[in-house]
Image (cartoon, rainbow, N blue to C red; front, side, top):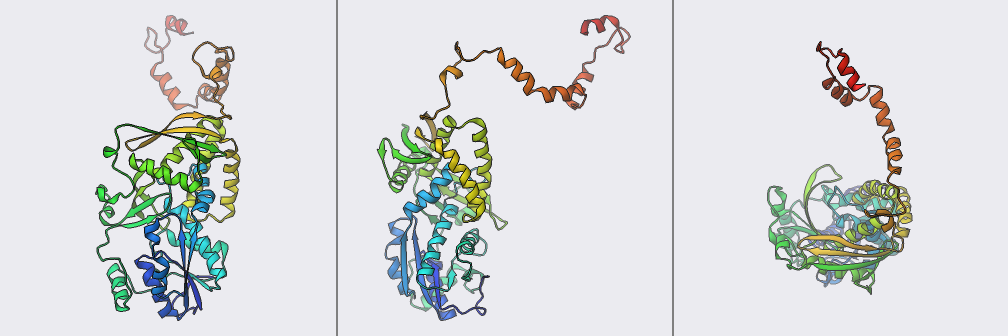
Length: 437
Protein backbone atom coordinates (compact mmCIF):
# COMPACT_ATOMS: atom_id res chain seq x y z
CA UNK A 1 0.00 0.00 0.00
CA UNK A 2 1.11 3.56 -0.59
CA UNK A 3 2.21 6.05 2.04
CA UNK A 4 -0.58 7.57 4.10
CA UNK A 5 -1.55 11.16 4.71
CA UNK A 6 -3.25 12.55 7.81
CA UNK A 7 -6.68 12.29 6.22
CA UNK A 8 -6.36 9.19 4.05
CA UNK A 9 -6.05 6.52 6.71
CA UNK A 10 -7.01 5.97 10.34
CA UNK A 11 -4.78 3.24 11.78
CA UNK A 12 -5.67 1.55 15.05
CA UNK A 13 -2.18 0.46 16.05
CA UNK A 14 1.10 1.69 14.58
CA UNK A 15 4.56 0.18 14.95
CA UNK A 16 7.22 2.88 14.95
CA UNK A 17 10.97 2.39 14.54
CA UNK A 18 12.07 4.04 17.77
CA UNK A 19 15.52 5.34 18.73
CA UNK A 20 14.64 7.58 21.67
CA UNK A 21 16.02 10.65 19.93
CA UNK A 22 14.24 13.94 19.42
CA UNK A 23 12.47 12.94 16.21
CA UNK A 24 10.92 9.71 17.48
CA UNK A 25 10.13 11.30 20.85
CA UNK A 26 7.88 13.68 18.92
CA UNK A 27 6.53 11.04 16.59
CA UNK A 28 4.84 8.91 19.27
CA UNK A 29 2.61 11.69 20.73
CA UNK A 30 2.06 13.07 17.22
CA UNK A 31 0.73 9.70 16.05
CA UNK A 32 -1.58 9.44 19.06
CA UNK A 33 -2.93 12.96 18.58
CA UNK A 34 -3.20 12.80 14.79
CA UNK A 35 -4.74 9.35 14.37
CA UNK A 36 -6.08 8.50 17.83
CA UNK A 37 -4.17 5.22 17.58
CA UNK A 38 -2.08 3.05 19.84
CA UNK A 39 1.67 3.04 19.27
CA UNK A 40 4.14 0.18 19.64
CA UNK A 41 7.79 1.28 19.78
CA UNK A 42 10.29 -1.10 18.21
CA UNK A 43 13.87 -0.60 19.38
CA UNK A 44 16.59 -2.39 17.43
CA UNK A 45 19.82 -3.05 19.32
CA UNK A 46 22.49 -3.17 16.60
CA UNK A 47 25.30 -2.30 18.95
CA UNK A 48 24.76 1.44 19.27
CA UNK A 49 25.80 1.18 22.91
CA UNK A 50 24.30 0.97 26.38
CA UNK A 51 24.13 4.75 26.70
CA UNK A 52 21.74 4.98 23.74
CA UNK A 53 19.50 2.23 25.15
CA UNK A 54 19.48 3.21 28.81
CA UNK A 55 15.93 3.83 30.03
CA UNK A 56 14.56 3.73 26.49
CA UNK A 57 11.53 1.54 27.30
CA UNK A 58 10.38 3.88 30.05
CA UNK A 59 10.98 6.86 27.76
CA UNK A 60 8.89 5.39 24.95
CA UNK A 61 5.97 4.71 27.27
CA UNK A 62 6.26 8.16 28.86
CA UNK A 63 5.81 9.74 25.44
CA UNK A 64 2.66 7.69 24.74
CA UNK A 65 3.62 4.20 23.54
CA UNK A 66 1.49 1.34 24.84
CA UNK A 67 4.37 -1.08 24.40
CA UNK A 68 8.11 -0.96 23.74
CA UNK A 69 9.84 -4.00 22.28
CA UNK A 70 13.64 -4.08 22.37
CA UNK A 71 15.18 -6.59 19.97
CA UNK A 72 18.82 -7.68 20.32
CA UNK A 73 20.06 -7.91 16.74
CA UNK A 74 23.82 -7.67 17.24
CA UNK A 75 24.76 -11.26 16.37
CA UNK A 76 22.31 -11.47 13.47
CA UNK A 77 23.57 -8.12 12.22
CA UNK A 78 27.12 -9.44 12.06
CA UNK A 79 26.41 -12.90 10.66
CA UNK A 80 23.65 -12.14 8.15
CA UNK A 81 24.58 -8.66 6.97
CA UNK A 82 28.06 -7.44 7.91
CA UNK A 83 30.02 -10.61 7.10
CA UNK A 84 28.36 -11.00 3.67
CA UNK A 85 29.20 -7.36 2.92
CA UNK A 86 32.84 -8.00 3.90
CA UNK A 87 33.05 -11.13 1.76
CA UNK A 88 31.62 -9.24 -1.22
CA UNK A 89 34.14 -6.43 -0.81
CA UNK A 90 31.39 -3.87 -1.37
CA UNK A 91 32.38 -0.26 -0.78
CA UNK A 92 30.24 2.68 -1.88
CA UNK A 93 31.97 5.18 -4.17
CA UNK A 94 35.37 3.78 -3.32
CA UNK A 95 35.46 4.74 0.36
CA UNK A 96 32.25 4.41 2.37
CA UNK A 97 31.94 1.07 4.21
CA UNK A 98 28.17 1.58 4.44
CA UNK A 99 27.67 1.29 8.19
CA UNK A 100 24.29 3.04 8.14
CA UNK A 101 23.15 1.38 4.92
CA UNK A 102 23.82 -2.20 5.99
CA UNK A 103 21.96 -1.78 9.30
CA UNK A 104 18.67 -0.54 7.86
CA UNK A 105 17.39 -3.84 6.38
CA UNK A 106 17.76 -5.76 9.63
CA UNK A 107 16.22 -2.94 11.68
CA UNK A 108 13.25 -2.69 9.31
CA UNK A 109 12.88 -6.47 9.24
CA UNK A 110 12.69 -6.54 13.04
CA UNK A 111 10.06 -3.80 12.90
CA UNK A 112 8.00 -5.88 10.48
CA UNK A 113 8.20 -8.88 12.82
CA UNK A 114 7.20 -6.80 15.85
CA UNK A 115 4.36 -5.12 13.96
CA UNK A 116 2.85 -8.43 12.87
CA UNK A 117 3.33 -10.04 16.29
CA UNK A 118 1.59 -7.16 18.11
CA UNK A 119 -1.29 -6.76 15.66
CA UNK A 120 -0.28 -3.41 14.19
CA UNK A 121 -1.94 -2.21 11.01
CA UNK A 122 0.65 0.37 9.91
CA UNK A 123 4.36 1.15 9.99
CA UNK A 124 5.98 4.47 10.90
CA UNK A 125 9.56 5.71 10.62
CA UNK A 126 11.30 8.96 11.47
CA UNK A 127 13.35 9.35 8.28
CA UNK A 128 13.42 12.74 6.59
CA UNK A 129 12.21 13.32 3.05
CA UNK A 130 15.74 14.24 1.92
CA UNK A 131 17.61 11.13 2.99
CA UNK A 132 18.31 7.60 1.84
CA UNK A 133 16.90 5.90 4.93
CA UNK A 134 13.26 6.48 3.98
CA UNK A 135 13.87 4.40 0.85
CA UNK A 136 15.69 1.66 2.75
CA UNK A 137 12.97 1.28 5.37
CA UNK A 138 10.09 1.39 2.95
CA UNK A 139 11.74 -0.96 0.45
CA UNK A 140 12.03 -3.50 3.28
CA UNK A 141 8.40 -2.97 4.31
CA UNK A 142 7.36 -3.46 0.68
CA UNK A 143 9.37 -6.68 0.43
CA UNK A 144 8.23 -8.28 3.68
CA UNK A 145 4.77 -6.86 4.52
CA UNK A 146 3.38 -4.93 1.56
CA UNK A 147 -0.17 -5.12 2.97
CA UNK A 148 0.60 -2.58 5.71
CA UNK A 149 0.63 1.16 4.89
CA UNK A 150 3.46 3.48 5.89
CA UNK A 151 3.27 6.73 7.83
CA UNK A 152 6.24 9.06 7.28
CA UNK A 153 5.70 12.10 9.57
CA UNK A 154 8.53 14.16 8.08
CA UNK A 155 6.65 14.22 4.78
CA UNK A 156 3.36 15.39 6.26
CA UNK A 157 3.72 17.08 9.66
CA UNK A 158 4.28 20.76 10.46
CA UNK A 159 7.34 20.28 12.68
CA UNK A 160 10.05 21.45 10.32
CA UNK A 161 12.88 22.34 12.70
CA UNK A 162 14.64 21.18 15.83
CA UNK A 163 13.32 24.21 17.70
CA UNK A 164 9.74 23.40 16.69
CA UNK A 165 10.08 19.82 17.92
CA UNK A 166 11.52 20.92 21.27
CA UNK A 167 8.64 23.37 21.68
CA UNK A 168 6.18 20.60 20.78
CA UNK A 169 7.50 18.38 23.58
CA UNK A 170 7.64 21.24 26.06
CA UNK A 171 3.98 22.08 25.47
CA UNK A 172 3.09 18.51 26.38
CA UNK A 173 5.39 18.31 29.40
CA UNK A 174 7.36 15.49 27.80
CA UNK A 175 10.97 15.46 29.10
CA UNK A 176 13.73 15.41 26.48
CA UNK A 177 17.50 15.56 26.94
CA UNK A 178 18.01 17.09 23.49
CA UNK A 179 18.85 20.77 23.09
CA UNK A 180 18.51 23.32 20.32
CA UNK A 181 22.29 23.44 19.99
CA UNK A 182 22.81 19.95 18.65
CA UNK A 183 25.95 20.17 16.53
CA UNK A 184 26.07 16.92 14.61
CA UNK A 185 23.60 14.30 13.43
CA UNK A 186 25.00 10.88 14.30
CA UNK A 187 24.11 7.26 13.64
CA UNK A 188 25.90 4.48 15.51
CA UNK A 189 25.98 0.70 15.45
CA UNK A 190 28.57 -2.04 15.95
CA UNK A 191 30.08 -1.46 12.52
CA UNK A 192 30.50 2.31 12.54
CA UNK A 193 29.43 5.75 13.63
CA UNK A 194 28.48 8.48 11.15
CA UNK A 195 28.59 12.24 11.58
CA UNK A 196 26.73 14.86 9.51
CA UNK A 197 25.64 18.47 9.90
CA UNK A 198 27.18 21.40 11.73
CA UNK A 199 30.49 22.56 10.28
CA UNK A 200 30.53 19.48 8.05
CA UNK A 201 27.81 20.95 5.84
CA UNK A 202 30.50 23.13 4.26
CA UNK A 203 32.81 20.78 2.31
CA UNK A 204 35.57 23.41 2.56
CA UNK A 205 35.70 22.87 6.33
CA UNK A 206 38.01 20.10 7.47
CA UNK A 207 36.39 17.89 10.12
CA UNK A 208 37.14 19.41 13.54
CA UNK A 209 38.65 17.02 16.04
CA UNK A 210 35.54 17.11 18.24
CA UNK A 211 33.64 15.24 15.51
CA UNK A 212 35.42 11.96 16.15
CA UNK A 213 34.15 9.72 18.95
CA UNK A 214 35.71 6.24 18.73
CA UNK A 215 39.12 6.85 17.13
CA UNK A 216 42.16 8.92 18.00
CA UNK A 217 43.80 11.20 15.48
CA UNK A 218 46.47 9.31 13.51
CA UNK A 219 49.04 11.85 14.64
CA UNK A 220 48.25 10.99 18.27
CA UNK A 221 48.26 7.23 17.70
CA UNK A 222 51.14 5.15 19.13
CA UNK A 223 54.50 5.36 17.38
CA UNK A 224 54.73 1.57 17.42
CA UNK A 225 52.61 -0.47 15.00
CA UNK A 226 50.17 -3.10 16.28
CA UNK A 227 49.73 -6.40 14.44
CA UNK A 228 46.38 -8.20 14.52
CA UNK A 229 45.91 -11.78 13.33
CA UNK A 230 42.47 -12.80 12.10
CA UNK A 231 41.53 -16.41 11.33
CA UNK A 232 38.86 -17.20 8.75
CA UNK A 233 36.58 -20.06 7.77
CA UNK A 234 34.76 -19.59 4.46
CA UNK A 235 35.30 -15.84 4.67
CA UNK A 236 33.93 -15.44 8.21
CA UNK A 237 36.31 -14.43 10.98
CA UNK A 238 36.48 -17.04 13.73
CA UNK A 239 39.42 -16.00 15.93
CA UNK A 240 41.43 -12.92 16.89
CA UNK A 241 45.13 -13.39 17.66
CA UNK A 242 44.51 -17.12 17.93
CA UNK A 243 41.63 -16.78 20.39
CA UNK A 244 38.22 -18.03 19.14
CA UNK A 245 35.57 -15.31 19.43
CA UNK A 246 31.94 -14.87 18.59
CA UNK A 247 31.20 -12.17 15.98
CA UNK A 248 30.09 -9.51 18.46
CA UNK A 249 33.09 -9.89 20.77
CA UNK A 250 35.47 -10.00 17.81
CA UNK A 251 34.27 -6.77 16.23
CA UNK A 252 34.12 -5.07 19.63
CA UNK A 253 37.80 -5.85 20.17
CA UNK A 254 38.72 -4.83 16.61
CA UNK A 255 37.01 -1.49 17.18
CA UNK A 256 39.21 -0.91 20.23
CA UNK A 257 42.38 -1.85 18.35
CA UNK A 258 41.53 0.21 15.28
CA UNK A 259 40.32 3.15 17.35
CA UNK A 260 43.49 3.49 19.38
CA UNK A 261 45.55 3.38 16.19
CA UNK A 262 43.51 6.01 14.36
CA UNK A 263 42.24 3.50 11.79
CA UNK A 264 38.99 3.82 9.84
CA UNK A 265 38.33 7.55 9.47
CA UNK A 266 36.64 8.56 6.21
CA UNK A 267 35.52 11.98 4.97
CA UNK A 268 33.44 11.82 1.78
CA UNK A 269 30.99 13.86 -0.28
CA UNK A 270 28.74 11.08 -1.51
CA UNK A 271 25.89 10.87 -3.98
CA UNK A 272 22.64 10.08 -2.20
CA UNK A 273 20.07 7.85 -3.85
CA UNK A 274 17.55 10.71 -3.75
CA UNK A 275 19.73 12.80 -6.06
CA UNK A 276 21.69 15.24 -3.93
CA UNK A 277 25.21 15.18 -2.58
CA UNK A 278 25.86 15.00 1.13
CA UNK A 279 29.00 15.24 3.21
CA UNK A 280 29.49 12.37 5.61
CA UNK A 281 32.29 11.70 8.08
CA UNK A 282 32.55 8.09 9.19
CA UNK A 283 34.46 6.06 11.75
CA UNK A 284 34.78 2.33 11.03
CA UNK A 285 37.90 1.20 12.90
CA UNK A 286 37.21 -2.51 13.34
CA UNK A 287 35.45 -2.80 10.01
CA UNK A 288 38.41 -1.32 8.17
CA UNK A 289 40.72 -3.96 9.70
CA UNK A 290 38.29 -6.75 8.88
CA UNK A 291 37.81 -5.64 5.29
CA UNK A 292 41.58 -5.43 4.78
CA UNK A 293 42.03 -8.93 6.20
CA UNK A 294 39.48 -10.47 3.84
CA UNK A 295 41.09 -8.75 0.88
CA UNK A 296 44.49 -10.01 1.97
CA UNK A 297 43.22 -13.58 2.17
CA UNK A 298 41.49 -13.54 -1.19
CA UNK A 299 44.70 -12.30 -2.84
CA UNK A 300 46.20 -15.62 -1.83
CA UNK A 301 43.42 -18.05 -2.69
CA UNK A 302 41.39 -16.62 -5.59
CA UNK A 303 42.52 -17.04 -9.18
CA UNK A 304 42.67 -13.95 -11.37
CA UNK A 305 39.35 -14.34 -13.16
CA UNK A 306 37.42 -15.14 -9.97
CA UNK A 307 38.95 -12.19 -8.14
CA UNK A 308 38.18 -9.79 -10.98
CA UNK A 309 34.64 -11.14 -11.20
CA UNK A 310 34.20 -10.57 -7.46
CA UNK A 311 35.46 -7.00 -7.82
CA UNK A 312 33.04 -6.21 -10.65
CA UNK A 313 30.11 -7.79 -8.85
CA UNK A 314 30.95 -5.85 -5.69
CA UNK A 315 30.13 -2.54 -7.39
CA UNK A 316 26.55 -3.63 -8.05
CA UNK A 317 26.25 -5.27 -4.62
CA UNK A 318 27.27 -1.96 -3.03
CA UNK A 319 24.39 -0.25 -4.83
CA UNK A 320 21.95 -2.81 -3.48
CA UNK A 321 23.19 -2.26 0.07
CA UNK A 322 23.29 1.52 -0.25
CA UNK A 323 19.86 1.73 -1.90
CA UNK A 324 18.25 -0.63 0.60
CA UNK A 325 16.99 -3.39 -1.69
CA UNK A 326 18.52 -6.18 0.39
CA UNK A 327 15.38 -8.33 0.35
CA UNK A 328 15.33 -8.75 -3.42
CA UNK A 329 15.92 -11.57 -5.94
CA UNK A 330 18.90 -9.66 -7.33
CA UNK A 331 20.65 -9.57 -3.97
CA UNK A 332 19.95 -13.26 -3.41
CA UNK A 333 21.38 -14.19 -6.81
CA UNK A 334 24.48 -12.07 -6.32
CA UNK A 335 25.04 -13.41 -2.83
CA UNK A 336 24.94 -16.97 -4.20
CA UNK A 337 28.00 -16.06 -6.28
CA UNK A 338 29.84 -14.47 -3.37
CA UNK A 339 29.06 -17.41 -1.11
CA UNK A 340 30.46 -19.84 -3.68
CA UNK A 341 33.63 -17.73 -3.92
CA UNK A 342 33.96 -17.69 -0.12
CA UNK A 343 34.24 -21.48 0.15
CA UNK A 344 38.04 -21.27 -0.20
CA UNK A 345 38.51 -18.24 2.08
CA UNK A 346 40.16 -20.21 4.90
CA UNK A 347 43.32 -19.14 6.65
CA UNK A 348 45.04 -16.46 8.69
CA UNK A 349 45.89 -12.86 7.90
CA UNK A 350 47.96 -10.42 9.92
CA UNK A 351 46.90 -6.79 9.56
CA UNK A 352 49.33 -4.11 10.68
CA UNK A 353 47.73 -1.02 12.23
CA UNK A 354 49.82 2.10 12.35
CA UNK A 355 48.79 5.75 12.59
CA UNK A 356 45.57 5.56 10.61
CA UNK A 357 46.54 2.75 8.24
CA UNK A 358 45.60 -0.92 8.25
CA UNK A 359 47.53 -3.15 5.84
CA UNK A 360 47.68 -6.92 5.43
CA UNK A 361 51.32 -7.93 5.90
CA UNK A 362 51.07 -11.72 6.36
CA UNK A 363 48.80 -14.31 4.75
CA UNK A 364 48.55 -18.09 4.88
CA UNK A 365 45.92 -20.57 3.75
CA UNK A 366 45.56 -24.29 3.06
CA UNK A 367 43.94 -23.20 -0.23
CA UNK A 368 46.76 -20.86 -1.28
CA UNK A 369 47.46 -20.64 -5.02
CA UNK A 370 50.80 -19.02 -4.36
CA UNK A 371 53.60 -21.50 -5.15
CA UNK A 372 57.18 -20.50 -4.52
CA UNK A 373 58.39 -22.83 -7.25
CA UNK A 374 56.39 -20.93 -9.85
CA UNK A 375 56.82 -17.40 -8.52
CA UNK A 376 60.55 -17.39 -7.67
CA UNK A 377 62.96 -15.22 -9.64
CA UNK A 378 65.61 -17.86 -9.06
CA UNK A 379 66.22 -21.01 -11.05
CA UNK A 380 63.34 -23.47 -11.11
CA UNK A 381 62.21 -26.61 -12.91
CA UNK A 382 58.53 -25.76 -13.46
CA UNK A 383 58.71 -22.76 -15.76
CA UNK A 384 60.53 -22.43 -19.06
CA UNK A 385 61.10 -18.78 -19.94
CA UNK A 386 61.09 -19.65 -23.66
CA UNK A 387 57.40 -20.54 -23.40
CA UNK A 388 56.57 -16.87 -22.88
CA UNK A 389 57.33 -15.97 -26.48
CA UNK A 390 54.49 -18.00 -27.96
CA UNK A 391 52.10 -16.82 -25.26
CA UNK A 392 52.90 -13.18 -25.90
CA UNK A 393 52.53 -13.54 -29.70
CA UNK A 394 49.10 -15.13 -29.29
CA UNK A 395 48.04 -12.67 -26.58
CA UNK A 396 48.99 -9.69 -28.76
CA UNK A 397 47.77 -11.20 -32.05
CA UNK A 398 44.67 -8.95 -32.36
CA UNK A 399 46.88 -5.89 -31.90
CA UNK A 400 49.36 -7.17 -34.48
CA UNK A 401 46.63 -7.81 -37.07
CA UNK A 402 45.09 -4.40 -36.49
CA UNK A 403 48.43 -2.68 -37.09
CA UNK A 404 49.24 -4.75 -40.20
CA UNK A 405 45.88 -3.79 -41.72
CA UNK A 406 46.58 -0.11 -41.13
CA UNK A 407 43.77 0.24 -38.57
CA UNK A 408 45.88 1.55 -35.71
CA UNK A 409 46.16 5.35 -36.09
CA UNK A 410 49.07 5.49 -33.65
CA UNK A 411 51.07 2.95 -35.68
CA UNK A 412 50.24 4.76 -38.92
CA UNK A 413 51.33 8.10 -37.45
CA UNK A 414 54.63 6.70 -36.18
CA UNK A 415 55.35 4.99 -39.52
CA UNK A 416 54.66 8.20 -41.45
CA UNK A 417 56.84 10.28 -39.14
CA UNK A 418 59.73 7.83 -39.44
CA UNK A 419 59.43 6.95 -43.15
CA UNK A 420 62.95 6.45 -44.60
CA UNK A 421 64.07 8.92 -47.31
CA UNK A 422 66.58 8.40 -50.17
CA UNK A 423 68.85 10.84 -51.96
CA UNK A 424 65.90 12.41 -53.76
CA UNK A 425 64.20 13.18 -50.46
CA UNK A 426 61.07 11.22 -51.39
CA UNK A 427 61.85 7.81 -49.95
CA UNK A 428 62.94 6.39 -53.35
CA UNK A 429 66.67 5.94 -52.63
CA UNK A 430 67.85 2.43 -53.34
CA UNK A 431 70.47 2.38 -50.59
CA UNK A 432 67.94 3.29 -47.87
CA UNK A 433 65.43 0.79 -49.20
CA UNK A 434 67.92 -2.03 -49.05
CA UNK A 435 68.96 -1.01 -45.58
CA UNK A 436 65.36 -1.41 -44.20
CA UNK A 437 64.29 -4.37 -46.33
